[in-house]
Image (cartoon, rainbow, N blue to C red; front, side):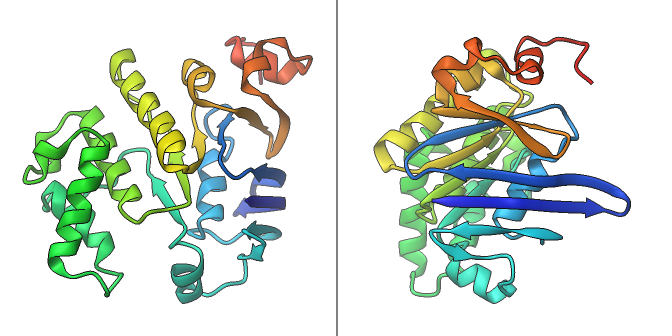
Length: 245
């Protein structure tokens, strides 16, 4: 379980997160929605330790992580977590296979052949076993997203954080990514937090949905009941109301 309590983060004079409270339950897919620029990606980067909060606490399986060193984060936190960045963050100078095995090199007990085998297995899970020797600039946007997911799951994470996984994709490719998130959750038991603007994706993949607004989680509900809520801000956002400020 991941617990975030009263998390605060500022950049210069701008407050981005202003007391975020949320819990990611084991085995669920939790979607976080909200307007652009509200700090959703900042929230993910704090959870995985890429940013340090100004105040508040983050617990991963009961361990408070905000004061851990980089080495401690690598050995005690990031071994449990994977992150799929919004634009994939793939190295164009490396093949798909090399992009995946690069992360595995930090685990020195894997031999070269074992790393290649894990990369191939990860690509098979995302339906791309045939592109191991290709380069990212030879791939479509949807394929790059799936390679980024393959790289994340190669580390066998308990938790997977997705930053806008369907952004820039057409409805068909978005559904492929959504189906993959569901598959990894159901078949591998991966607990997921998904940052998204795509309400159709929320309906399809989420167990729960929370809204980040003005630095706080202002509403949380079961995704199956999302169209029947009494929170005005939440309702305006999911209905695309242009009056939401």
